[in-house]
Length: 391
Image (cartoon, rainbow, N blue to C red; front, top):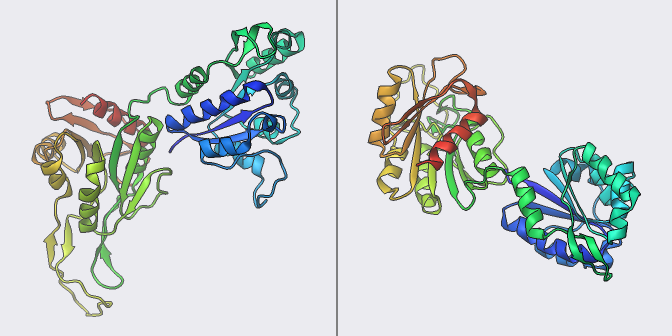
């Protein structure tokens, strides 16, 4: 899911530089929410930040918004990081002392993840023993300090106290939250879950696929800066957030959705388990005969259809096997014109449908084989993305 960053803006002439910071973070793909102190609004209008962030600006604890949630707690939990830029001597002292007397300080106290404080003030204020001590307290608590620059300050004094360059702050946050952003600028189409083939008005054919592997892949792509088109069938887990969700039912529905959207993708990962067969004759009402014979017909092959049309796009397929794992997976790799196959023996303990772990072997079109140990599906997702990045 896309990471959320809170930018806290305190009072000071450097508040205008926070506008560029918000814009840079948005361009990097982060969801940005801005909290302003009352003094900050004297330097920059909240509307400016609302326009740049695309979100409402939070200014006080008791605004006109509906109070159906404890807002400062919800904001603190939602954010993956909190940046205070500029951070005045006043808010730094409050942070160190645990004072929570407005929206910014209250969210700061409640926030439990990464905190980045970017001081900006007069050189004498910056070097004041109280401010130096307060910043040392924050550092000992694990708060990241992006040191200010030296130069001519707004008051005319010369020395350390000028807010760090917004690009430097944005890069610092990016390296902290997304150390591996190798999928930034790429779109990955992921299929997940099981398709459903109706028999009659109340019964259907499907399989045990939970969608867990597809969700893990979607989370991994967004954590590495990429966009996700998530084409999913029936799932027993929650769908990933901040993805384009395309809900389908049958294998033919999934085929049509994939072919329609694959032009927008750089990579297609077929992690779904589409039903191989469908009932030849579908009944609208519930069947009540004492005995019943169903005639099945083959469903279209989605992976093969993509392989025939992929051009310079990358195609990754999955092979869930019960015997002859490497042989069957290699055959599937070739027949689908895929670039990689993720093969797993679903009879092994800790592998297969519905589990939180998997045991996979990555087989590449160039002949490379990478046998992986048992690991959780989120870790496996990153191994798969590592392999895709090398294709």
